[in-house]
Length: 541
Image (cartoon, rainbow, N blue to C red; front, side, top):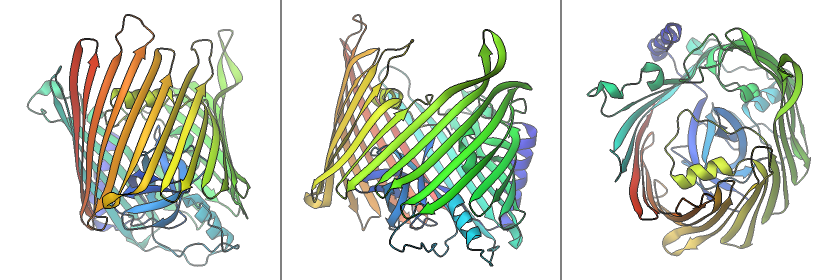
């Protein structure tokens, strides 16, 4: 990393021992899906309240996904918002915050999805006289091991250390701080210097920022972070001002983008912009509209100038709309740099739930594919599905025909373009929640056809069970996939994948987890066996 950023990091790490915190990112995953709710398992749910919004992470952006209806010590039950139906094991993010008295809704019977920003607006609207300035400190240290092995290449093991530190109202003042830092390296380093690719590739700073509350409704932040109302642009290294009004929130920022190769600080990637957001509540839920304009530079020359628009609306009691658009305002026209108006990103989702045991949604996604800087290595089935099934039209439904049975599925269609042909995909699952020994099982089938895949069929079965009053969770899974490529010279490929996972909450703030996945692949006469082992130990403090 660049010297100034390292200086800030060292300063913060030495100062944090005098602090005590607030908001922290909690990571979980979808463990079960019913026709009405989605179950998400966390290491623990401290700092999550009923009515909070849970998010999915896309390209370092947090996208609202669920609103919490009820919870236990290690899991949350949530109702899907205006997003596509989530898949089992989908990664979910929660924003841990100070436990406060829930906001009282006028209707009494309706639970609204209140994000952090929504709560600030409600507080301003009610003219709260008291302001919490009690200092708090919290954090988490996690060590993970990723091992990949194969019959055709040398195995490798990567270690990763994650440190999360947050300080709220340092010294009972208006100053707060947040950080999320990761360091990874191959196990063979430092024995083999050739395995070291540099500090910028090993050290990833996803968040490192200070925040100062100028008043009850306005604040200023400095450092690297993802801002809730400007999540479209990802992480920003710079200065941001935000003011929350009765119904309007507005803000502006100036800074730079992280380097697109190694995520380090790069002052040549300057960017600046502003946004305005309007938020209201009605008897059906939330209506929120945001508009922002940003200019991004590369070596002090305009690289991209764009505007984004986002709208969320509970149209009727059982109908939700979510839409997001990005328009490029600068580009090449007849080989000349000039102002333009080019719609480059579109996402629209309409969700309808007419009955308690049935829900459906229709969406259209024309956003660019996502690039992940850090992710758990995927097998061929998962990586192909992730790449080929996100864009285009998608129809989802979930139906509970009987008390303990849930059936659901989705179908997607990607329109052909000048450069690509059409692609189609479909997925269906059937779950039964009352198998013997308090186990629930799920059957899945997935079909995919793309410009380079003549067909792909994947069949799967999984069994899941809790032990020791929910402190231990175990899951086994088997999947079988068949790939037939358009290229006649390529032999069909078959994969058999077996996976086992275990999660154990040893103590209130200490957890361990393990996941093993083995794959047997056959392509013509070639047979390859490979697998991965993931181990993690996490301590909160």
